[in-house]
Length: 119
Image 1: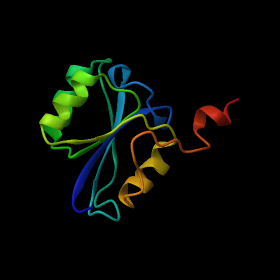
Image 2 (image 1 turned 90 degrees about the vertical axis):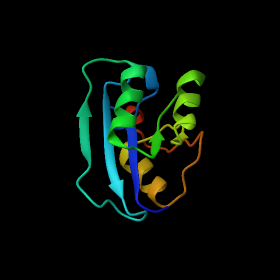
Image 3 (image 1 turned 30 degrees about the vertical axis):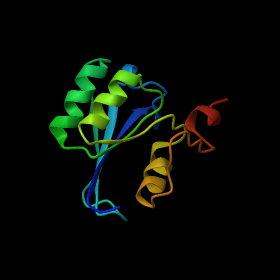
């Protein structure tokens, strides 16, 4: 993986379970192995899959990591040549590390999510 701008949908430091209900994202620029700048958390004004897609395009994101995503939005992002790794569950920090190591795939479930710790 070379020079990739990654966007992860976030809820409580974990990957957000639904793309269309996301109100926070993490954007990280990487050289493939490590972040090349400080990760940015962006709070969105409200949940909107269409607005999130617009942000992804505007930011020049090349990889989106999310939980569930509707087929129409998935296909739109793929059509725009953006890689989407969906159905991911786990802490955003660990998900990011796995993505940079090219060890993350659709449907990945990483243990010790913050939701599990609160139980």
